[in-house]
Structure formats: structure tokens, C-alpha cells
Picture 1 (cartoon, one colour):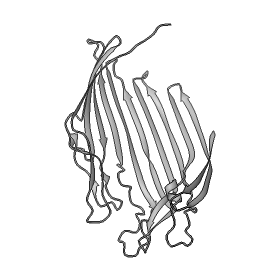
Picture 2 (tube, rainbow, N blue to C red; picture 1 turned 30 degrees about the vertical axis):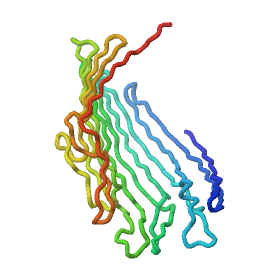
Picture 3 (cartoon, helix red, strand yellow; picture 1 turned 180 degrees about the horizontal axis):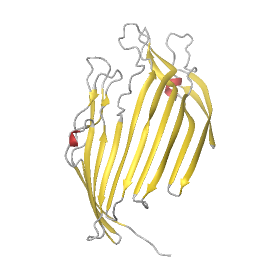
Picture 4 (cartoon, rainbow, N blue to C red; picture 1 turned 90 degrees about the vertical axis):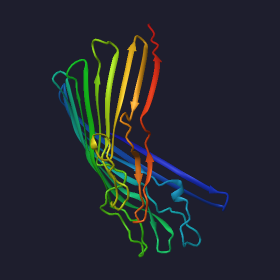
Length: 300
């Protein structure tokens, strides 16, 4: 069991318009966890934790529209997050196969919203609600001393429960309640095969596959980023190759990132209007990284 107590205070002075203000936040965040060791090679666990995130300085000390005298956003409250987690791990066949899995649910409440008003002004409210839940898993297989195969991934859902965007009657999109969050792929995976041959001591060769499934670019869930990468997987799918050789304290290596030279974007976002265009953050093409390092070791 554990706990964390946060106390913070903003003392704000603006010498341009002679405005000033003070705002304080305090929060106690508990954490409780339990682990049960079934055998020397297996265990299960469960955790419960709460956290909070106060609104930023630039959100609080903004003058509310249509107030005289001007008022700050003292009504904003910290966002509250509640996390539930349960999982376990096991090592089988004398550490040849390691498995682990975790189920989680993160609930966000009172998240900061920027809501467009009928007069086109923007109003801040601590009223947003979101849900994040999924499963994380991993497996490592060592059939011999030469080979290592690992795979890890997460399947998750990130959803707006109550998220108001506009109070203006003429706006087509007033909220995104029940919509999936943009830039939040439902599946992320990483897998690698490493070979260390006995006949060439110190040599290692690894091939890594990185994948992110397609995701919505906009908040209204109309447009997806679903380009195809290596193996025809939609979203992001790339191969990385790593080769290294170590002799005593000297190691040389070469990493080939995006070995198949896929054309893809780290992220792609889009506005909610039908006339909006996508904005892409392009990823680098095939990239070679060469290195030489020497490790110093001392004896007592």
C-alpha cells in the first residue's frame, strides 16, 4: 500500500494588464497492490491506483468572456484518473518460455474541455470523461542458446465517454460522445528474432517487426490512416535489422531501420469538417546506423 499527497499553488501576476490571482490544488492519491506467488516460476497480481492532473496555468488564468469585472477560470478542477490492473506471469520448461499478461482499465473524469460558445468564444470546463481499457501481453521463447524469439503487444480501446466540443447550435459536431479517440491504434505489436551462432562467438543478428494497426485521424471517426506496410499490414508495419560483433571490450554494429524502405507516417491527423485535410508526420526512409564502441572494465 502506498499514497502520494500533492499540494501546489499558482501565484499569478501579469504586468501587462495588471491582473493577478492565486489558485491552489491538493490531492491524496492512494495505491494498493497485491502479488501472490503461486510457484517459484509463476505469480499473479492486482493493482488499484488513483491519480490526478491539475489544469495548466494558461487554462486557469485566462479571462472568461462576457464577465465584468473579468474573472479567471477558478472553477476548473483537476482531472481524476482511476486505474485497475490485474495480470500474471509464468516461466515454463526451465526458463525456455516466459509468458506474461496484464488486463487494465483507466477511467478519466473531469478532463479539461475547450467548448465553443454560441458567440464563438471558448469556454473551459472540467467535464470530460474517457475510458481506456485493454490487455498487454508478451512471450519470450529460447529454444536453444543460439536463438531467442520474443513477441509483445497490446490490444486496447480508447473512447470518449462525454466530450463536448461546441455549444453553438449551428455547429454540426457538438460532441464526440462514444467515439474512439484519434491517433489511438487498437493494436500495437513488437516482435524480434535474435540469432547468436556458436560457430562465430560474439556475433549477433536480429530482425525486428514493429506494427501499429490503423487509427482514426479525426474525432468523428470518419477517416482512418490505413496505408499498407510490410507484410501488407495496415497502419504502420516496418522491419528493422540489427547486426553486431563483439570481441573482448570492442563492439561494432550496424542497424538498418525501415529495412524495406516503407513510405509511412508516424502520425496522421485531420479536422472534423468534411473539407478538412490530413496532416502527416512522415517517418524516415531506410536508414543505416553504424557504430563502434569500447567497454572499459576494471578489477578490484
